[in-house]
Length: 175
Image (cartoon, rainbow, N blue to C red; front, side, top):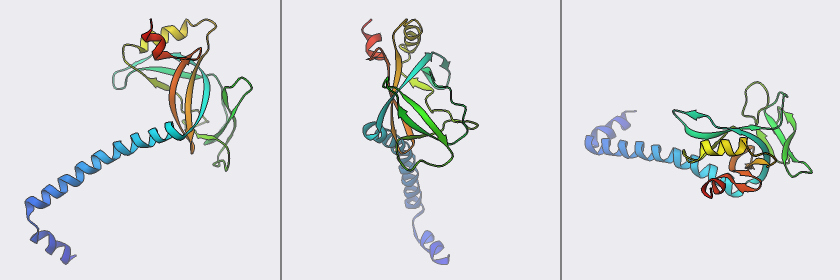
């Protein structure tokens, strides 16, 4: 302990302050960069699934505009992990729910605390497009609305919101 204190005392206070500030700034940059890189890795290398959704458009003062998504699968099982499967129609669904991490196959960690809930709830987009997206999807008639997600190691990242196979942003910009 004395050696550390001796080293600090010998070290110039200005140099110590500058070193501490550099370390603090580096940590502040590393945390968000890691989070972004981690999500990007899932988007790039994860397995793709499609889920049918019913969007609604809320506004949140802190999060901005987004399209709130309701997955059209009612799951009332207790468990932390949901195994994913793809039906004959090409859309994904949760085939089973368990408390133990599955050893094989694609799975997702729950987004809920009491029962299993898919962690698909919000699709963020440009603020001026979100209200129009909700209206478009609500009045879609026979058109299908679905979200594509990428799944890797139990984590899920939303990659797009589509209406009849066309990205919602492309539809709205083409209006």
